[in-house]
Length: 81
Image (cartoon, rainbow, N blue to C red):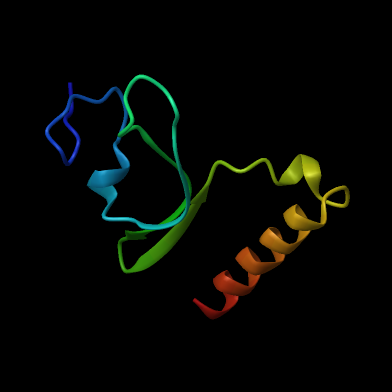
């Protein structure tokens, strides 16, 4: 099983291994106060960079102005990044 950047075992690729620039993240309230979830990040891929997001944007376009703004900002970032 692969390990995270902190040496813990992970079922999937850990964010710490991606050397990310975290855009949106939360600390989960629960038994382990150090649990951190990343909802949007930028990481290197080859000679470029990739923006990864778990935010529910597509289903909220045209319904939620925050989703509209985030997608617009992502497109601008892609154009200028």
